[in-house]
Length: 189
Image (tube, rainbow, N blue to C red; front, side, top):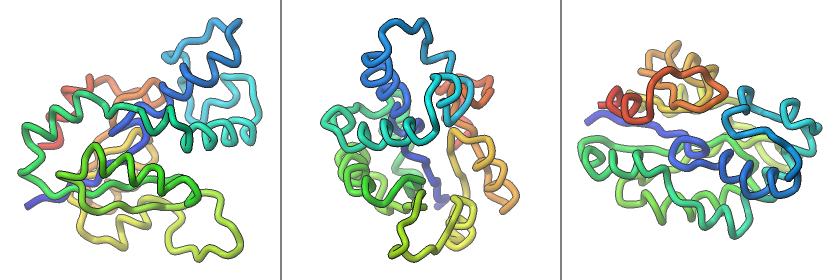
């Protein structure tokens, strides 16, 4: 049975879109920017803010009631209902450990019937946290069980491909994917 490793933020959910519309646009109502204008990730320069301010705002959103209430990406949910039982699934995220518990709860609530393993590659380590992996590719190499890797980052997908893993780029405005979500998900089977 093949194992699919799924990025969580901006693949299983629409974190950036929810943060952009629910936080950034609310705080910047005069801006004419749309979600489609986010052609870089991180988008701090496009949004006219510092990288630190962007990360702080995103991290605050990640632990908010609004983030907990986020719905999963509907086409992904439909794909899991139709094909999920044919594969093993792992979720892999890169975010600070401090807000990983909220994500794990969200993940298991929405995808727990299929995803039974959750990996975290922490970003912004504290001095007391051991460093096992610095990138998703390092985690995937250590894991040694991934057949397919789905992520919104072209760099992460390319790194997985170098390990011999089938990499699939999930479409987002910042990554240049020309496929629809439905077309992308069909390549996972």
